Length: 149
Image (cartoon, rainbow, N blue to C red; front, side):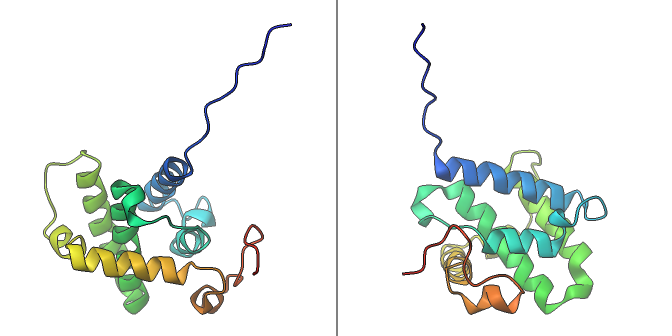
């Protein structure tokens, strides 16, 4: 009998980054008519159901999360502008992914060190177990995978 090959361990940060890029891409493609999971509420709910690592774990993940969370906060304040904000988020995402050479002016403001740190901290707080923000959006205060202490 041949010994089975052991798969290398999956890096949870890389896995989260890949899942996030997929979900963000689907949202930007505006496939909400196909699957509500990729609508704004679906993406927001998914983001609030994640455990976000320290910013130093992945600069790419941090930047994508900041761009997306910042856009969501803007959409919450002005829901009528969702299409415009989604378009801007798409341009920012395309630039960060290297699909566009046009650097959106809004990128400087959103990804400035202070703004980036504040926005990421806000997302981590909103998605923390027991967060009232999760409950206000109709999500459970705790995920099934989160243990109450």
